[in-house]
Length: 59
Image (tube, rainbow, N blue to C red; front, side, top):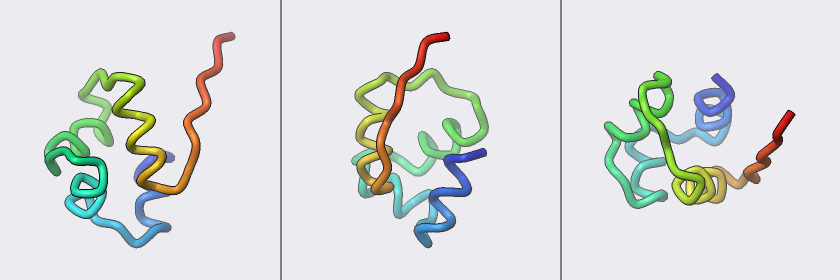
């Protein structure tokens, strides 16, 4: 997934990213596996921690 690829490019583990976001490693693992329904606020924090931006597109 794009999330895993971006996290790996930044040299971050799931635990590293979780700490930056203020959540648990298991929450990052669930998100990466597609087994979660994150809020927009959580996704915004995640993208900020990765130095990316959140783009929401309705088609």
